[in-house]
Every structure is written in structure tokens, then in C-alpha cells.
Image (cartoon, rainbow, N blue to C red; front, side):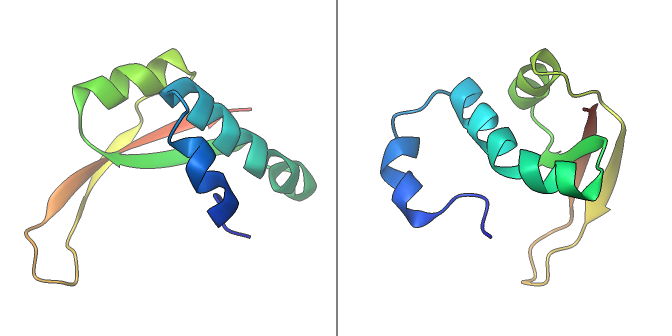
Length: 85
């Protein structure tokens, strides 16, 4: 099941970042519970604003990794953040 389905697109345009994160967490909470998951994990392109936003929502800086896209773009770094449930 996609995290965000097409009927949500119009609603997403009216949501704040906090509401979007809450919506995403709600969408994956049942499968997480069914699998016994204890951690949410995300990666994002390094950005101070995003780091502050995710930190305010319980994510902790963990590590970084360099990815090389397959479409000849230059490598870039992704920050990794877990959040324990």
C-alpha cells in the first residue's frame, strides 16, 4: 500500500509539515504494530531546517551515507534519523 494515495493529494496541499508527518505516521502505524516494529527510520538530504523539524518530532541524528544516483547525477549525502516508538 502506498504511503500516500491519490485521494490524499488535495488534502496534502492544505496540511502543515507537522500534520503531514502525523498523517504519514498514522498510515504506517498498523503495519508497524503487526510486524512488531520498534523504530521508525528516515533518510533525507541534509538540510538544517529538516533536521530541526525532525528533531522536534522525536527523531535523533544517527548517521550519514553517500548515495550515487543511477541517472548520472553527482553523489550526495543523506542523513539518517531513527525514532523509537
